[in-house]
Amino acid sequence: MFKSGFVSIIGEPNVGKSTLLNKILGQKVAIVSNKPQTTRNVFSGIFNDKESQIVFMDTPGIHKAKTKLGEYMSSAALATVKSVDLVLFLVNAYDDIKDYNLGILDNLKGIKTPVFMVVNKMDTIEDLPRLESAIETYKNHFPFKGVFGISALKGTNVERLLSDIKKELHEGPQFYPEGEISDRPETFLVQEFIREKILEYTQYEVPHSVMVYLDEFKEKKDIINIMATIVVERKSQKGIIIGKNGRKLKGIGMAARKDIEELLQKHVFLELFVKIEEDWRNREHYLKNFGYRPDQNG
Image (cartoon, rainbow, N blue to C red; front, side):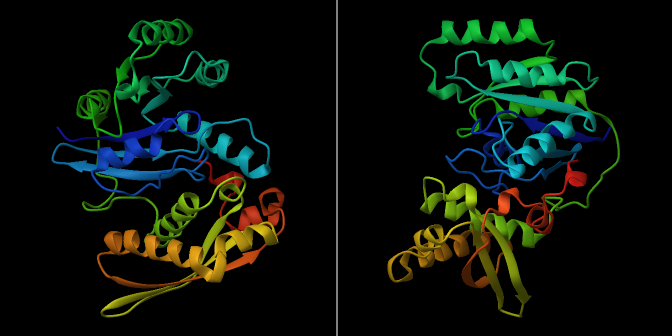
């Protein structure tokens, strides 16, 4: 019997949602960094094997928003839980009980969708009794269908989790052609890979103020020409990204090109530009132009 279904991965920022998705798929499709709120869009990665197709929805970290972009991100994540077959609620193994996490669970009460609690980063744990006490508190707060301890980074127990996910799914069709890895086009993944390198190369307020869009994506016989614009909110941020004599921008471009070539399996010529759009994260016009529409939450 062939099974299929949709699974939403939710949780606060930096709990390893994108890392888990990449580990399940066996390749990089979602960007990862140690900066909070790395994921901004609801993004699906497609798992295929002989007996199933599972569409995993990687979601933005649910957080207390300070901008309109932040409000969109949290609402987009929570909106997925009603339209899927299973929800994975991720928490960090090393964290104590967080009232904010309990608040996320309160938002899930009343939905009919089964929820797995997934305790990530188990490889960091030394005080197991403390963790067991925290898990018990969460279990008393919400009726989870199952609780799993994993390390998404190292892959520990990920196969076991995947096996139990399959058990929750029903017989169904193949929603996407075999070989598809995402519901997003290659151009979206390219933009995200560039943004990931900006997150790696910058700090303080810069990563949260950045947006990337493509001006050109031309595929030729032996090479793909890509021109992309990096949008920031202030002149100082533009200077930080470009760097002295353009060195930082060059480093970002070289690192991004490597990942893009691995994704597209073709040589890439990548050219980057930087422009300023003041306070774009709070301006509806820019949010809509950059794809952050309230009607695209699911």
